[in-house]
Picture 1 (cartoon, rainbow, N blue to C red):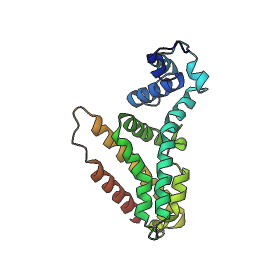
Picture 2 (cartoon, helix red, strand yellow):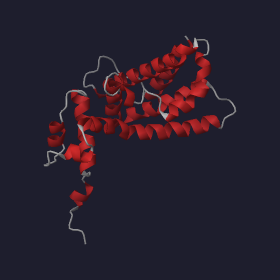
Picture 3 (cartoon, rainbow, N blue to C red):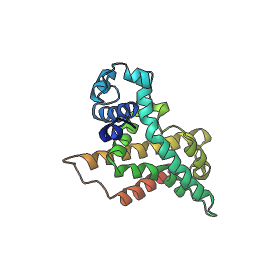
Length: 210
């Protein structure tokens, strides 16, 4: 029979505590503003080598924080693309929706909003932008076939560049929306989720067509 208390059994494991703590501190202080020591202490670990034990390095911890929620986004996108590809009428706007909506859905939780702000940080950070979701993930590559007609008017060398700009714009808008939702005194009220999602999709489609 286990001697662990119910509280102990409900407590997240050491690796998860480090991820949760790092996510919160990185959101609050920035990717470059949080030390391994701060994460270890705030997570309640007594072992000063906990980050190295579970992740190998500070950089790998940050990458793991980003990857943790990216996996669920990828899965949701793939399901949406399955539905799109089974349809006879495959419109580019629907492929853009498959890329954007799983991120919009993260606005519904505190953890999701933290991730969106971190994603925006990572997308603009020289050490992490290649590992962020703004680069070509499997779902983005899969959806490109349907989106490509939106940029066929551009020279070939500009097509992928324009698409990356569209994704970057979406990530920036999502980060701003997450800040408005969490602000105690926002400069303006955040848009309703459905209005925000529809307008963001329209904006990305418009940017690609321009």
